[in-house]
Image (cartoon, rainbow, N blue to C red; front, side):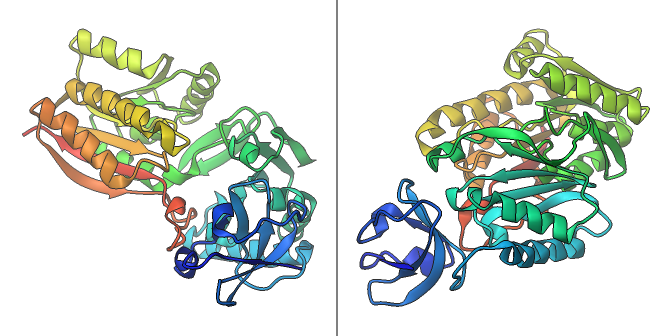
Length: 390
């Protein structure tokens, strides 16, 4: 096994629990094969355990937390098994959740979402991609009732690892519509056509919070995807709910979910959210509650400036449309937009409009997306609710 050494004073972040070693932190980059197991040492010779090596990536080593000679199926059975045990403790009675959340479950670059007996899998690191068959074998061993597994390996992060983009069924079969129940709401999801892993499970608890405050309100759900927030608002007794999304596929799926739940107060429309909000402002429309849950506006630090402008624009438009006493729900899944940054953006736009806002709820990702303390990258979802106006 190759031993890699860190440059002097380049181990403080790793000592604090961050499991990545960057290429510019190493004294040398040996020509070992991508995906090979290496052991990392400090400049003084202290071992930080073994990890998966990629000489072609900025993240040169993804640490595994201990000394490991090989990553075979039993290794994955142990680690996925521990992840499943944690979900049983924190997601009691649930059958849809994030089963594995990468580094937070000590499986760097592996994301597995469960939707009943069907699973959606993302592998974002070269070392794990070369062991995809072991991951699948372990999943089937632990959950023998599995009916289908689909890989959704279309993330741009794979390209940073030198990996091809792929999507397809890797075990069993996946129906056109997978049925789940979330917070008492029935959903049929398209794992094949859905974004990322198929559905955004990280907002599960925040959707309940919206339902609790929606009674008798007119609610506008922007970037509605397959209808999660809109359906919860409708189930909460909203007077009227309109969901907006630019994806025709998402709008069709959301409309079908409305029928499943017999929600006559919920409807959906295909439209560009920015254009729709701007038109609503020109028409002097008003809403009691507006939900802003956009896709990530930036995937890298170099685009943070443009992303900030995007968040500022949608929140400004929403604030102009809300009645006094209305509720602004604003979220960001952009890893590079920090919580205090998003809060300042919204506050700044409110000040410009001379609209006082009060923060009444602060949420984050649901607990099946655990945050690895020591790795800020695992805390990515920001979620605010504001009371708008005096």
